[in-house]
Image 1 (tube, protein in one colour):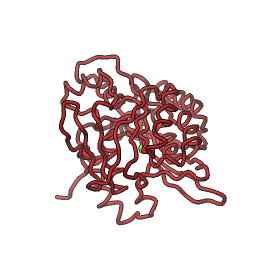
Image 2 (cartoon, protein in one colour; image 1 turned 90 degrees about the horizontal axis):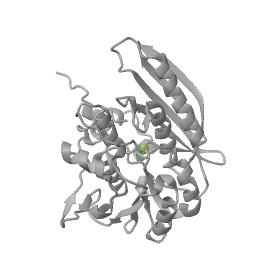
Image 3 (cartoon, helix red, strand yellow; image 1 turned 135 degrees about the horizontal axis):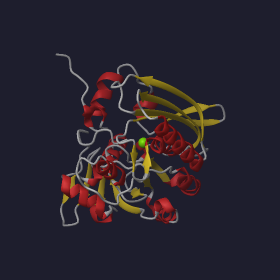
Image 4 (cartoon, protein in one colour; image 1 turned 30 degrees about the vertical axis):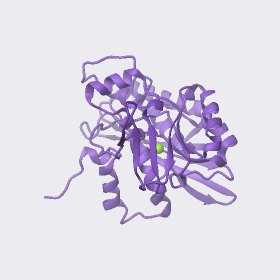
Length: 336
Ligand code: MG
């Protein structure tokens, strides 16, 4: 029997990586794809641009703190920002299931417009397709974007170096925990909110000030902090060590994870950045992040060192150290 796609293949863990390696890599092997950064960088006359695309299938489509429309704008704005680019223009493709409410679609469009305005970016092209009832689940959105990278800014996962500090712009796991709660299957309620937000307004001034000291920026979305750091450690051929006591996590997120046997470090975030930077600029970055409303809980959570390439570990508060592996991606389907 021929092998079939499983939910884990979309989870952003080892199953996704294996699928890309086996199915896509033999056909698509441009050096920019192999870098596996948040966006590709393309040389144009007079400079460089960043290009990226992302699909959104989150269920439920509306959740505390946002909806699929806001998420689809933030995801692409943030992926451009992670390459140091100033987001310039976005496109959106909608796949809508027959029977979806037109009022709900208008709510999603309004939410996209408001988020784009906040981020200072324009939606310049779009496409709408409708499929028969049952051929999709409500609404799926794909956004693509282009941005301009300022001169002298070169960030990317491959640039992490021993000695670098690892910084988070805030609490981890809020989006993933909120979606789980919003599905209502758990019979739980709480005051959790997704962190979904465009990060360019906070990060662009920071890149202007500390740009050359910043080696990597990445948004820890699907697969959470653990997947993000595993990817970067692999790309750069370095090891990373985190300090559990310095990692900001809301008590409500901890509570939910305890109940469900989940690790908040594997939960998705949609309004956070992980910055890996030279030690001499890390305190300055921290102070600048904390001055912004989206970075109030920023913290230095670990460091890069010369160890087994690709290994990420965490020093536990109660003592001892454990490995933080990539994860298979089975845990949390359709989180973004
Ligand atoms: Mg990303």
